[in-house]
Image (cartoon, rainbow, N blue to C red):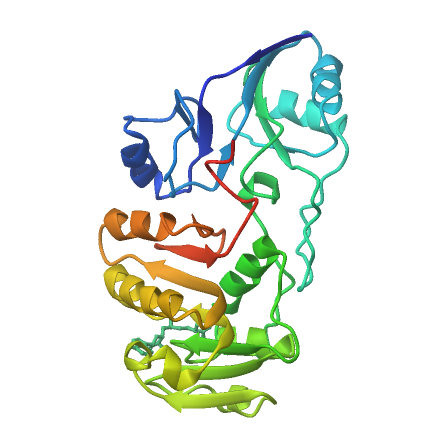
Length: 311
Ligand SMILES: C[S@@+](CC[C@H](N)C(=O)[O-])C[C@H]1O[C@@H](n2cnc3c(N)ncnc32)[C@H](O)[C@@H]1O
């Protein structure tokens, strides 16, 4: 067996956001297909779908030898196709099956590591047993409720909570800022939590009627933490400049009145990387591009064990 560690990290790009990743890394293009590489581990790279934290290269002769190399390291291996699809498919057939079915929610994602691999030629695999995302290839889909929630935005919250492996519980209090039309509020109420939904626009009537949901027509950013009181979950999906969100979140953190925070950092035009780095510098939190995010990032606090800068 011929395994050689590769230096640095390998980043799986997000379709349409490759230029952001290339700019963060400071390269002109990918090393292989949709994979970008840094020569050393780096902090504060955000526009990726998954980071290969301990990349290596392995030479192999036959398909079964390739599968044996991966199986010898761990069970879970998710393939990434960009070339040599047929040979890759033959190797995958000899690896334990990884389900790509939509998941129910809440779903406790297994703690076992999810590796990633691809072929760069007929006799060379590149792979990493440890990756930043617990999902195969950084992708997760859920069994959706297409009837009740008034928007599909709840899928972002579901994904963030799945990564956190913690969920709002009955008896816990959530403040949902920028709640209209009510997707996130619905998701939190479904879990049995109490929700104070704050927005200048109203929520859908069927969401307002849910038990435990209270609506406050207000500018979320002029609402002081001491006015609402302590919350277990501070949720924010307000469309605003990232710097405004950062100032507001900083006030909440300084108040000591919230335990968990999930907020989307929505980019207006080019991404505001200065503010994004300020979020990332808050100890204990992580800035992630979720599978369900579009032109935005998500800050999750506190979040341990998910890190593109994991040693
Ligand atoms: C992307 S939508 C939120 C979608 C919501 N999370 C859901 O799941 O249905 C953004 C919301 O932010 C609200 N918004 C914008 N500025 C606000 C502010 N300063 N205070 C409160 N809400 C605000 C808008 O009215 C809009 O309803």
